[in-house]
Image (tube, rainbow, N blue to C red):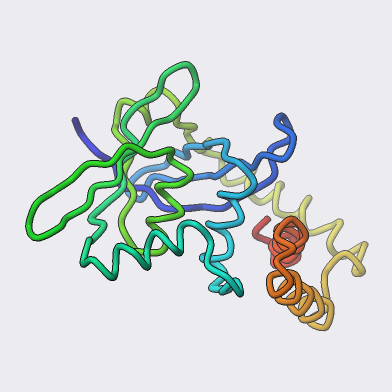
Length: 200
């Protein structure tokens, strides 16, 4: 079973599923992306860690890491290794006292754990072949045309381009939402900040 290392490209709301998010993974040594639909709670858990925002009380995944740290259990890697009826399955590969253990998990939980342990994430080649989306290659002229088309509206509507002050204000509101454990609002603000930074 050949494994391909992937990283997190981003999170976005899923237009097809209410309250769900699309977690986009990308192949580090390739050109394919793998979208996985995950729940809002798991999306928030991943996003808060990626943004280095510490909630006032630990999330389930933070608690999991704290317990692992206390007992000296190390997470070596995450492997997304099965796909049945459009549902992905994963394994958390752990090590305790030199002994390796494989724990079944949902990919969303496994990745929320991976970002807390800085553990690498892998996808089997079979799954990437079946569900991966290849980036389309464009001709040079098409790239330039697309860039000029995108640049035009930005110049026309300067208001849409966020000033630094608005970004700071949103960041402050995000921190307040996390402090008050309003995670749905935090997720919405995080998405808005991402859009303003041009990565959403």
